[in-house]
Length: 346
Image (cartoon, rainbow, N blue to C red):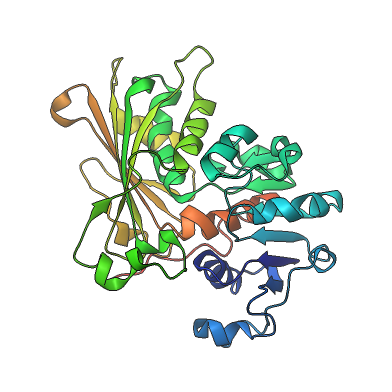
């Protein structure tokens, strides 16, 4: 049994972490922090946890956090950087759900996030927490940077094609649509029900913060001689609460062979990637509240365009579920522990 802390427990990723950890057989949530809600019982803010968790929010304190075996950061960008050095120096293991340590270049991070990186000396120590690629490194890591939601869906869909050099890496396209919870729990006019319902739109077409993370992850799996992956990434807003659907396009440059078999072989044994039978189309509702990514691959009319469909729940496999999966790997627990939830239907 380990004791964990959650820094920034009032947002959607925080409540999702609590939901998953409340029934985890090997974990006790010892601390959950919030300056604004300090002293408030968690179940008062999140009634769904009544009877499952008896804990109050408290202000973040390094001394208190270091009493735990692992600290999750479910905070806006920049927050984890300010506290990370003190935690690392004291030997605490960390899974950071924010974007603070995902990018390997501090200058690129500063350009996309609009502020200098607060702990550039720790970037090299962070392991990118996509288990389907970095499982062995995660196992020994002290600091894991949990991937973003869009990058998870896009990378899992394109990795098999790039690893085998079957497609042109310079002309990849990712059209991905997310539910409104992906924008966080803050009050914003653009996310009001009356603004989102019965509508569908693209946003950040000129450049989204997840683009450098997507390209960095794809380039990491390419053979050394390959042209670095370049992605045209266009995010969209779905009129739903949870879920991401990514439609990915790639141009074949070699004989593709049996793509269905390629994907099935690549993800054989992966507990949270499901390659659907040939011809089936994944739906976001088939992964709602689960840690599963479901994939389908097509080559329409046997022409040179390969289409991959990828769906995840943005709050689970796209955030908190993947964070728990990383924790399980780090501490030698069964990878499915606390994550063996069947998706909600309807």
